[in-house]
Length: 397
Image (cartoon, rainbow, N blue to C red):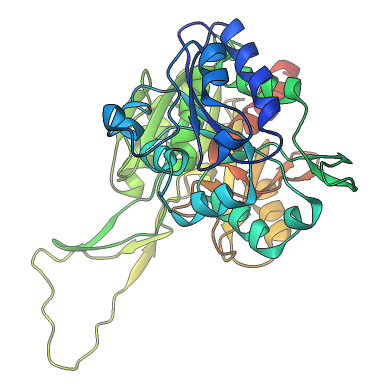
């Protein structure tokens, strides 16, 4: 973990003393650790103790004249924000965007990955408000290490004790392990929506953000693989190192897929390709004529995965299915019809997941119709799990 910069958030709970050992172990691993404390956390463990163990200044007061704007400086170039322990109070602040102490301010200023290890009384852990705050944070991509069952500080037995220090340490280390298990495997990944023009100013499309496809490309590169990313219009930056191929229309995406398919081992069709396009593209803007409606004649676009199936090149093929009803049945039909090795299905009618979200809840089905339901996870986590399944198929060929 040498040269890794970690912001370590400590909130005001009795488990704050356990954070001392975690900070010590992180420093021992070579990480650069900056401790940030919430309001009243210094009542449990003094900033001086954390300063001695982290070998860096501790940010614990918003009103230190010598450290004004510290919540901005402490987050600069940091790789990860860890909050352990995380009390019900700090979870509420994080979920609702409050910024009234060093830790909550730093959280809002930090744009990187966040890992949270809660600790509290079992009744607080089970409260609906806490669960809602956790769901909100998860929908934004925050990862959690759930508390363990056992004897709590209040003397009762229940779930709420801070996870074992070694469990938290391993989770942190896993963020930075450079895996190369996808070395020499070349992926062709599609992402985003397509835009099917109606006239010079209007088009047919969908709300796809492209985040799932981009997360897949990023994780492929992180694990030593190679990736060609064919993307419809998005607001995302291509991951470093990918061979990026932008496009707009469904037929453009199809041409790019067919062009590059032979040079790849795996095709992952994560794009939300328009099923229909206007039969005729108007050369001029269609004018509104009073209260008269407008009838558009649409034609089906080419089904890219069916076109791939016709070529029968022996590639590992993964499809996606965004559905609003009959999730598993619709996904199975698509799996068989398009001769896929895997299909990833998600219910886009569920609030807070799918399009535009940083998280998703998906079902993965393989060629043998084995069904795996994944709980709500960040799209980067889903990408890693999906790549694990793909790697198993590649190795079996």
